[in-house]
Image (cartoon, rainbow, N blue to C red; front, side):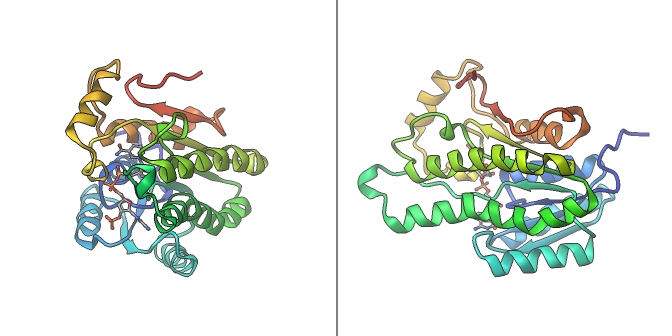
Length: 252
Ligand code: NAP
């Protein structure tokens, strides 16, 4: 009998259709959770991910919603609650990435990046927190980035949004702790997903040269840390940001 620590739990992974989010979805399902997969526009990828969950014997829902849109988030959460039940495990993973010099950073790109990466996590969290408080159980993981910890002259809005997410994580971890809700963040380094398609090979080679393990990471290597933070193996851990980057950044 496999160990199923998330059996009977309902999980939501925002941006769960592809990349790191999909790896988190599959881990959660393998470990027993029923999973709602939120996506923005790639319906086929989301359906494929949902099929993978069903093949593991778990319930799955693939639902479109722009996490930056309050009304769409409200509808998303209502449908998950009606179809799967209240959400126990939340991974705020949906994100967009800007990669351009400061001369090309427009107010529109700044606003969109903050809206999706930071306000999106706020809106989804605010939509689930009251139910978690009422049921005295919740585990939340926010996917930040090492760009929250280092200067990023080519990703100014992105780095600001992720630093905001780290601060948000700390503050709500303290606010929610009395209700048995733990909140942590994961800060990945460079991970092989479509989000880095715009990054040049030269830039990737430089990053790899500055990474002690000598390679970029895979989505499932982030999902492993997410699994730890959602599970009771991390029962005394809240408000933390765990860095998953092959040693490129070492804290403290
Ligand atoms: P990805 O493969 O591009 O996946 C992005 C996911 O976010 C997709 O599922 C996408 O949905 C969804 N999404 C985008 N905008 C959305 C919106 N407005 N509302 C709802 N969903 C939205 O990228 P990834 O690398 O897996 O990124 C996942 C997270 O990891 C992001 O927060 C990213 O910042 C973070 N991260 C990535 C890296 C890296 O090197 N890859 C490093 C550090 C942190 P669709 O499929 O519908 O487009």
